[in-house]
Image (cartoon, rainbow, N blue to C red; front, side, top):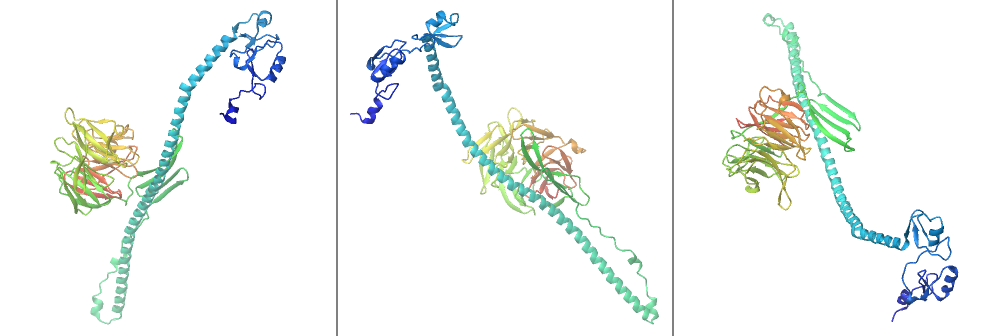
Length: 560
């Protein structure tokens, strides 16, 4: 039994009132109650009405009434006037010469169009929009995560920039303090000397006065004048405060310079990115008299030749030659650790991971393995593809490992491959990091990642420094010509500092070449009395550790 609610939902009401329908007009296709039948006939008395019981109704097209001819229904459509007309309009009216179409056929055509539109909406357009909606939802979620990561990175960069600025002023303080100590020591020494001479002269005056008072001839006769040596003052000690200059244009540039140390903070707008970019750069200028780099340590090793080294922290370094050992020594030359490897002729390259673990590439017959030293034990971390030998190594700031690989069978082709170690221990090759191949040859490629993400490569085979960007495209090359040295450029060890400067050894000319991050030559560093500088590393304090290939001696250079 139906409830009152369900019964109310099943009742069909009259099209003109709220009463239940009982009749149906087949001519007009409307539902009628008993009351509205009479009203419907009266209002449209000009046309005939086929009124039948509701259950006997016929569903058919209800043609509209003609507005010009009472009692006539429109059966055609005037194409020119775009309106429905009756037969009388077509025969005698203004539509006589116009093109027409049957309303029933037009209706059927429009129905097909509507059905096609429904199908297209349901089958194609709405699903397409739904997919786009899902994509936008994913994009929103991804954007939220990436902007959150961006904000975290921004905070990290803020901290790092403050650290770099602190380093700059610590450097300024260090140079200032060093100059102050040197000058104060010289002035104090001169002060002591002058006061000593004054004391000597006062004693001499007192002695002369006593001599004048004596009656002893021998005393006066033995007098010898010493005034001549006191007539000229000792050489004056000159002192000079370091030349501290600065430039302040808020919103544009901040700069400071002391001696040959120059740092600049530049604020500029890159038009192609439509965003503001600030960057910190360091420039090294011509040396100012009295300010020179310092050799803070000279260390003898047992490696002759000395092939490679990598700093650990501030005052220690791993070094190796062409035997099967790798030794860790401190700045005083004391051995801290020694690793014996399976490399009969020494490793091809060494590096340090972010966890301060030693990496080395095996230099055996095939040499396809890169090993990591954990708790004194060597374990294979990476195996290069068949036919490619692992040579030089470089660990990046992101934790990736750059490996110089050389083909062993058909040619001596050299290339650099980036290996990424995932958190789950999986090793992934990043094919886009360094795309280019390097000149064929036997020499190992030395590498260093710059603070802007560039990979700086010392290609001894080509006697060139090659720098590629994050996308693997070559930014510039340096062949040593701007340095104007007597012999040809012979690069090997290469490092970068916290300001983006590139430092590379030149064994032929016994010097270091220093470039800025864009490849512009700044200066050469020589006069540190080290033959054949070959191996190179830089510690956390920015001191350079330079190793001689022939003698195995390491010199540690500060304030360079």
